[in-house]
Length: 120
Image 1 (cartoon, helix red, strand yellow):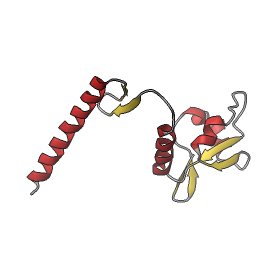
Image 2 (cartoon, one colour):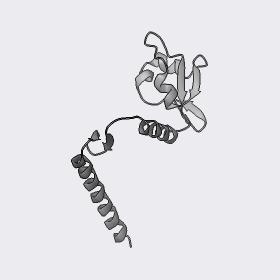
Image 3 (cartoon, helix red, strand yellow):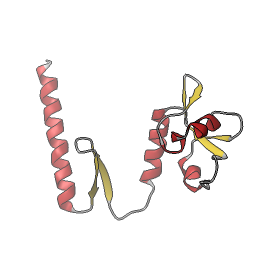
Image 4 (cartoon, helix red, strand yellow):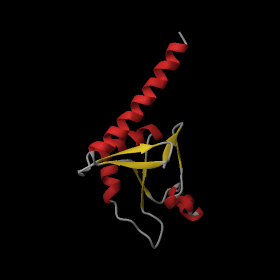
């Protein structure tokens, strides 16, 4: 759930793929909490009936920032990077993988710098 112009709306699929769940989530019946990834991650999931609790974010940007912060605190022996061209998550678990990623960033920066200089 996410606010848009102060009004709570449902976006995406997942839990809200059911029309009944969609109506339930926007009704007065469930408990609505401010989106907190730490709390949402441990919230018990009910798979036999509608959820008793939903989390609502102030905006997509707010949700993205909170999720990035949450993900950055997860302890793991590698890093990941989203590749928008392949729509894949690349695992940066070796110097070679990191080097390839840096080359991609350098190429992008070069292209953007050229575009900027073309504009004067």
